[in-house]
Length: 116
Image (cartoon, rainbow, N blue to C red; front, side, top):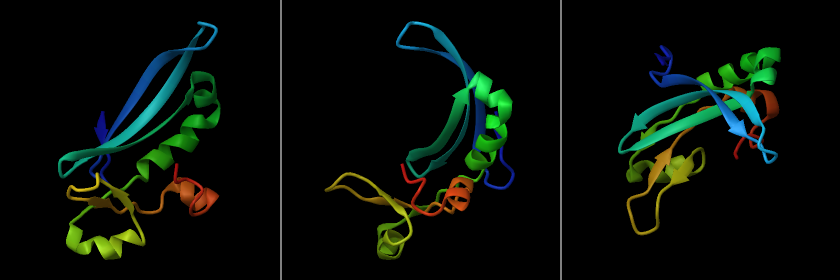
């Protein structure tokens, strides 16, 4: 694992095999950017098959995962954050708001295309 000097987030790389529906093992690669924000861990995971990873998938996925940003807002700032951020929480409890800067995915595909 390494720490991204721009964000302070921890970046981890994984190699693993997934079992396909036909019980064949499929080698995969993934990169995770994660940080502790308040009591929550926020993360973005990007991955692909090992074959796609070596054919340019790594050069596509790494900048997207490295661009991940998140900030914890207090409920007093919630009205302002609702327009620009992602709301997480359970009704009846304190709601937390995360403000995500534009990622490499949004800058290449457009705002709203990377929300899922």
